[in-house]
Image (tube, rainbow, N blue to C red; front, side, top):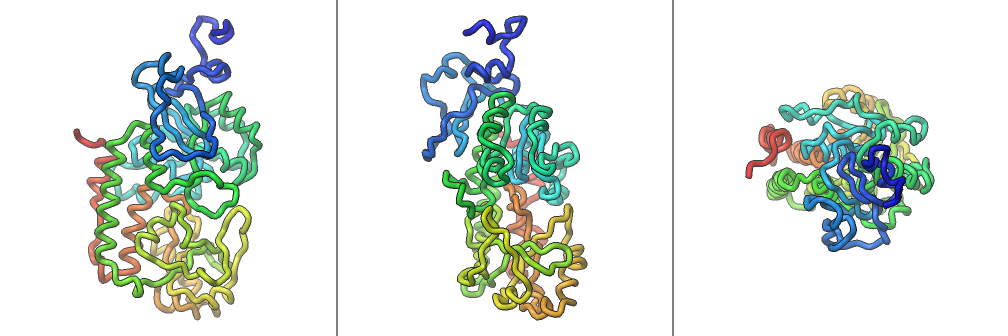
Length: 396
């Protein structure tokens, strides 16, 4: 070890250890990110046997590998984590580690109303540092001084194009490593590395927080809900198609999304077997390279069986959506001609960044909304059981 690897009293500082390739001890991180190399491995959770970190750290150290950043090694569970999108914050809340969350890309995109139905489950949204401020400056990352950045670095360099690779390397070395993967959509040309499904990404986050039991319990609830719902669905040819769009409060134009994509924020729609109304129409979905809109004339040409309208307002209830969005469309000269409006099949589109808790509520919401006769119950999954898993953990 070099002499300048230690501080004045001989104890290694976190940034010295990062700089010289040793351990990040402040929040439980060891040597930072390994090379991604573009490779995918079916089981990538174990550190390489005989690695230097294994021989110099305690036996309870562990590693987590996730594309594109590679492998991050831990000597204890990180206490301070900086996420970017709300799907990952929702994962942290689900695992009982919401208090460790330090940040959010944009508060208005984090839907938290579902926590109100889970006793003891909440998050202080105002306490999260909003990373977007006419860009994503680096200063908040230094100020948060998080133990880990739960962020796909390509979100900063390619999605928003606000950082260069040198900026990622600077924050990785001076503050803490990055680990994460943009999972909410699969329409970006730059995402040429492995995608993860919602529950694959959730499992990685569970590995970070060493919460295997909580993860498996919630996964089991999800699997049971999916099985229940799909056992009662009508025949596929009786499923309506849907147009998923962003519309705003008094929509005159719509930004289309594609239900046919495999992004994590559409998992609940796939569970219900909803067909993409835009398939074969030439209408492309939102992506880094496409942010176009369509008007009522185009929407009338498609004339979907149902509309799923995303509208960014925190805590938007079904009644408020009816009053502010649906009523406007019913009174609109062209909007009122849409079959979805006439047949009362205009629904809230749900959050763009859906985590596992969002997902459970969305499956239930759309099952009951689209097929009310098949799902007359008030609730399709046990809120008390879910809240207990989150707040108390799993016995045994």
